[in-house]
Structures are given as C-alpha cells and as structure tokens.
Amino acid sequence: MTRGSLLVDHIGELVTNDGRDGDPLGVRRDAALLIEDGEVAWTGPARHAPAADRRIDAGGAAVLPGFVDSHAHLVFAGDRAAEFAARMAGERYTGGGIRTTVGATRAASDDDLRATVGRLRAEMLRQGTTTVEIKSGYGLNVADEARSLRIAAEFTGDTTFLGAHVVPAEYADRPDDYVGLVCGPMLAAAAPYARWIDVFCERGAFDADHARAILACGQAAGLGVRLHANQLGSGPGVRLGVELGAASVDHCTHLTDADVDALAGSETVATLLPGAEFSTRSPYPDARRLLDAGVTVALATDCNPGSSYTSSMPFCVALAVREMRMTPAEAVWAATAGGAAALRRTDVGRLTPGARADLIILDAPSHLHLAYRPGVPLIRQVLHNGVPR
Image (cartoon, rainbow, N blue to C red; front, side, top):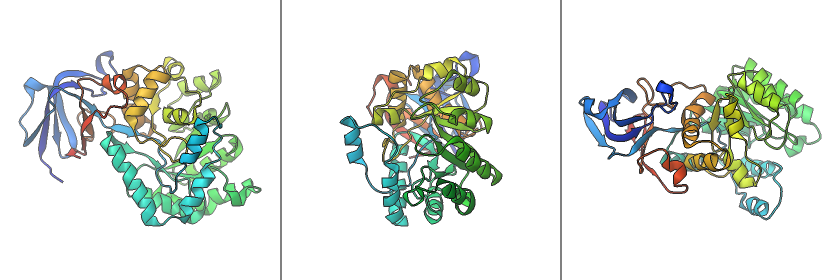
C-alpha cells in the first residue's frame, strides 16, 4: 500500500457530510482534499490546497464519501432467478425461498462461498461501496452459521449473526427448540466472528417473544442489535428494536404512527431497502413520512439471491428518489452518513479530517446525477483507505 500524502484537487463539488451551514451534505465548490496515511487530513478551497506527494485531478467532477451498505447477505450459494421470474409473473413474495438457499449454502464448499462473497464485494467496490455489512443466515445450523461468519469476516469488520433468519425445515414443528439452539450452541460458535446479532421478526419467521429472547442473548454475549422488521406487514418488530436500543431496524415498509413516533424518539436508524420492493413488486416504504418525523434514515442494498439481488447503491439512491419521495440530497446522505449511523461508525460516511479516506469520483459534476441518470455507470474512480482501486 502506497502511503504519504495524496491531493485530490479540481473538485467541482465536494460532498463532506459535515452538516455545517444547514446543509447536511456539507457541499463545497471548487474544492480539494488532502489524504495522509489513509485518512482525510484537510479539505478546503482548491486555491488553498497544500502540497502533496501525489495528485489526482478530479477534472471538475463531484467527489462523495464512499457508500456505506449497512445491510447485505453475501454468504450464500445457488440461484433463485426462477423465483424472481415467478414474482414478475404475479406470484406473491412470502420469504419462503430462504430455505432453498439454505440447502445450497450448506452443500457448498468454503472456497465456493468465499468466491461468491469476493465477487459481490468487488462488484460493490466498483460501484462506490467502500464499507459493507455482511450477514450470515443461510446456514441455520451451528457449523454453517459459524463458517459463514468466519468467511464474512475475511471481507469486513461489520459481520452480523442472523441464525434467526427463518426456522429451518428440520425444526419446522419445533420452533422453540430452534430458538434454544440459536441462543445456545449456535451463538457460542458464531459470536467470535460477529459484531452484531439480527432477527427476522416477521410472520412466517420469528415472533416478538422469540426475537426478544434471541436478541437479549446476543446482547449478553456482547453483540450489538439489528432487526429485520415490518417488511411483509405491520408488527411489533420496530418497537421491539427501539426498546432494545437497536442500532438499526431494517425494511420498515409497513409502519403505524406508533412505530414512527418510537423511531423519532430514539437513536435507532430506519434502514430502507428499496431493492427488495423493486424485486418483489411490493409497496415501497414511505421515506418522506419518516424524514418529516425526524427519523434518521439509511439506504442499503439488501443484496441477497432471493429478494434483492443487486449490489448497486447508486441504483438504490435512484429508487429512493423516484419511489420513496426522498430528495437527491437526502438519498445520498442516507447512502453514506446514514449507513454509517446504522453501523454506529464515525470513521466512514463523511469526508472530514480524521475520517477514513474512502471516496468516489463521479463521472458527473454533481451528486444529483446519481438519481438524474439512473442505470448509468457514473463511478469514475474509487479510493478505499486512500488507495485508488
């Protein structure tokens, strides 16, 4: 890795996310940015740029923090394209296809799983994602959940134990026994490789009592709390997450006024996953309602083989603007600083002194183009830890 100083100058629009002057994006025009030892050391007007060992000329383009994808399921095997085709033909999404991926994942080798994670992580990086959270959840037994997290930990420090994704087929008539397995031997095997614990609190998956028990055990083991909640219908998941101090509740598609009030009065982030609604032909979350209530909102891909097989944060930004009534600025903030908040990270999602030098240079003059030109590959260059990728 090349160290020393690197100046990125001739930046037409720099998104810092410093929140000054009433602008959450902290946009600076005609700017420059200095990187030293993998961190942002200085930002300011290009005319005041300090000397550096190396230089990148942004050519008047926009520079943004790298995207922070705080919800992804990358450790899996198999393909569910036929399930997608059936949904596009009118079949309703229920989450039942998860068990199909479980069978394929259990049968896959470590090398096969590692290759899939590596391929998807590389896709994400090319599209500007410099930080990603990776969940388990397609093993659903002690050995396969532990190995899923061990492999995920080779690619990110933000790993999440999702043994409570669904009840596997062999425990279909014994859900209480499966909860006991998750809270006991499975958690013990998974915790050394995990930072977070998550539960799919939804009809057909885990009810509030089971979710509470599993999350409490995870907290006791030192893991932070995340929660899949209110995707398929109204339910107790959002308020349970707030009660337990979850860093994030994810999906948030079907919310009551009480759910919104609970989120607004908490530090829990609502992470919205528009790729899932796109891929399942389901109603989109009402981001405008959440934002107007003062809720912190993040965007993430939910990359998984069944309900959202996209690795593109720019695509999710465009969907959020078009389908969820977010402004382009709100969507960009949610995909960067919002994702960092959902992971309780202060070192990413911003371009201010002391932050990790994760940034993207667009092939465009403004962040507006991410929604204005959907589907166009606008990521010209990515720097991760200050290193061009």
